[in-house]
Length: 129
Image (cartoon, rainbow, N blue to C red; front, side, top):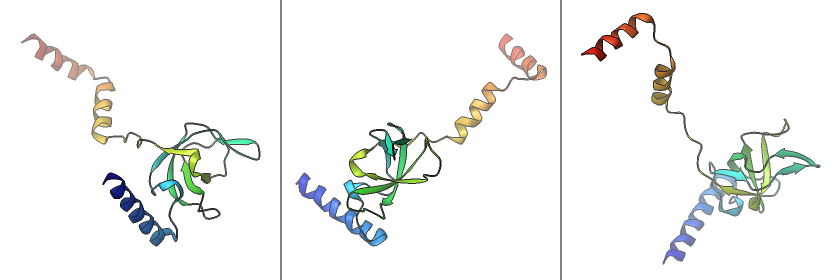
């Protein structure tokens, strides 16, 4: 039963992607999947993406949709490659990056900001009770 459901989901995903892109994304990836480079990726002998770099799947490769996936990597070693078409087995799905929570950022800001003399006195008075 599991295999059947999995196959149905795969076909459903492929159908959705065909509607959006005109073809399915190689390797069963979804647009928006977070992935990491399995190896260093080179173009003409120069490393452009290092192993372990996180990226986001943008869709199928326009040039080779059967085998390649278009990925926007976070950090590129060489400028000029916004999106890179990678062979689908060169990447694997990973967790989404931790999102900055504005509430947490605000708290950290408060904790890290030195208090002025007046507020320090208030704190001391409260401690004496």
